[in-house]
Structure formats: C-alpha cells, structure tokens
Length: 474
Image (cartoon, rainbow, N blue to C red; front, side, top):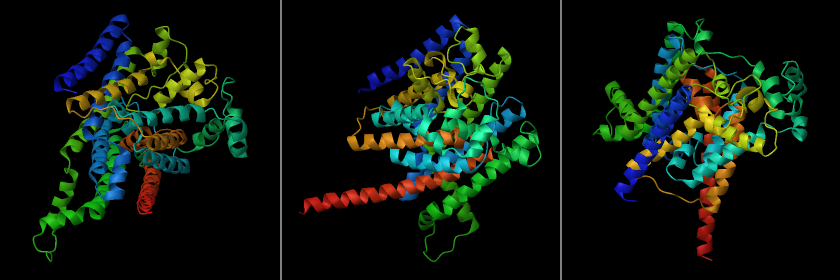
C-alpha cells in the first residue's frame, strides 16, 4: 500500500470516529458518555500498537530468549497508571473497585497464562494485532468471546462438579428469581465461593481508606505498586539483563562492577526501548485520566452506571436485572467482547439473561449503544491508524496450525478470564495499578502459566523440527 493510501485510510478512520461522536452528541447529550469510552479506546489502541504491547510477548521474550524489554514496558505503564490513579482516588473520583482475593485468582491466572502463550498473544495484544490486519489474532478475539458466553451459562452435567458448600452459599444469597443460579456452574462458583472471599486493598490493609491521601499514595501506590514493581525489575535485571550490560560496560573481564555501574545497568534496562517506554507512559496516564473523565460524567448526569443513561434514551433491552450494564469506567477488555456474543446468542433464542455474568452484573445491550463496546471498536481503529502511519498494517491469513492454536489459546483465556473476573488487563494490569492485591495474585498464576506455555512451545517446536529433519534424510 502506498504512503498516500495509508494516510488516506488513517484519516478516514479518525474522521469516521469524529463523525460518530459529533452526530451522536447532536442527537442526545448522553452519547458524550459513550464518546469518552470511544476516544480513550482509540488512545489505548494507538499506545498498544506503537509500543507493541503484549503480555504474551513479554513472557515469551523473557523466558525464551532473555529479552526483558516488554516486561519492563508493562511495569512502566503500571507505575504511571498507579500514580495517576492515586491522584484520581484522592479526589474521590475513582471508578475502581477491588476484587475478591483467593486461590481462584492463581488458578485463573495460570489458565490464562497458558492460553495466551498458545494463542501467541494476550487479550489486549490480540486486539491491537487485529487492528493491524492480523486475522490469526482476530480468531483469538473471537475464541475468547465465544468461550466466555458459553462458559458462563454452563449447567446440567457441570453441576455435579459444584461442591455442596458452594451450592448452599449461593442459594443463601437471595438472588432474583430470574437468575437461575441453581443450574449454573459458574453462577454457583461466583455466588457460592468468589463472593465469600475477602475484598482488600493495600490501603485498607494498612488502616487507611482508598480515597485518603495516605491510602492512595502511600498504601496503594507506594506499597502496592512502586516498591514491589521496582523489586521485580531488580530481579529481571539481575537474571536477564545484567550480564550483557556488564560485558559491554566493563573493559576488563576481571573488573568488579560498582554501585554506579549497577544503577547504570538498571536504568539502561528501563530505557532499552524508547518506543515501548513512551507507549507505557502514555498508556498509564491515559488509563488514569479515563477513570477521572468517566466518574466526572457520572457525577454530572447523576448516575453510578451507564444503565440508567441508556434507559433514559429508550434503550432498556439487555439491561441487567439491576438496571445496569458493564461500565467499568476504565480500560478493560474481554467482558464487552463476550457481550457481543451473548447478545447474538440471546437474539437466536439462547437465554443469556438467566446467569450472573450477563443477567445480574453486565447485561447484554445492543453493541451499537454499549459504552465498553465503543471502547473496543475504537481500540481496533487506534491500532489500525498507528499501524498505517508506520507502514505496519498488513492483512495476514492464519495457517491451519496457527488457527487451531489461536482457538485453543483463546478458549483457555476465555475460561481464565471468567474464573479470574478479568484478563491480563482487568485482572492484572488495572488491579495491580490500583493497589488491589488480587492483581498480584492473578499475576503470579499468569507468570506460572506463561512459563509452562513457553516451555511447552519450545518442546513442540524442537519436536516438529526433529520430525521434519528426519523426513528429509529418509
């Protein structure tokens, strides 16, 4: 594609999004709320593509070839999101809520970590790669979405796997009659187990509130993010980066590094890729400002969720039994994509409103007026624009083998997302940055799963190459 065509299509995407924002706002003021999601989604897509941000790539590069660039970039993004998030929390405008913490988060993270290595991309990475024209990544996104919509409504034989304690606890929650919790494995898992786990933040564990200055900055940011994040980077430096740096820095092989050398090596690792570092900085700041803007509009319109806004505009179909829709108020992926599939399934006759995930929590509104859907669509657009401007947009067809791995990996990520109440973004990136210890717990599982996934693929690749070599000499 010529440079002129690339610029034309990049401009066309931006112009289309501008037209959508202007036209819908002219139709009704409440569409401003959806446009906030749209433009932050666009920014996320640009940042992800520019920095090549992918959690799967981070672990693969680290465990397979010892390159820490992406892992460092992710920590930079988390740190800046945490800093901006602390300011937002201290003003009382944060939209974040901690998740229940327990063993389930480790297991969910492990399943998700294996899945993203099988698929060749995490949830957010697969989305920006789809925006680049990678159809294998698009298969991953579809697989994640379909798996979630199916998994959350599984009943029948799966109920035999439900512990009696879960079933009893779930039945005592007093859920509405429209939510058929007794015939849903995931429903009983959520209501009977997950909801019974403690909900904490580093601030509350230290005796502060999340909204206080001490809690936001000292508890959630310093203790919850900055110190453990810096410690993790020290580990990465000593195990994966230090040897190469010292070989270049110290002229004599027998020379012993000084503290200044170690600090220089640590800093060189942090800024090894300016593109990734800049993207991490922008991504972190944008994610924090997104919370501020969303909560500001909620205060302006006198709502706590977008559900009432949709209802006032006449869109009451697909609202949850509580009159709400999925409206996190910050960067999130996987849930809204599952809503697309849930909406289609429901229209085809499969009742998707009798389970907790859709019917009680998130709803399945028409994708055309779903705030979080606007964010995902714009994320694709932002990634496409950045790829077009850097001559990195290209339609790539999957092979049969990569397509199979994409579907399997996407399915595992879909299951891990629902067990962990989020993916690499919602269950790890956002939670860690906002001082939620369950994010680190999910991350531990995700690292373990990614390590196993990388080792498996190394074995698989070596085995396949050995077979191919053997075939050439027989």
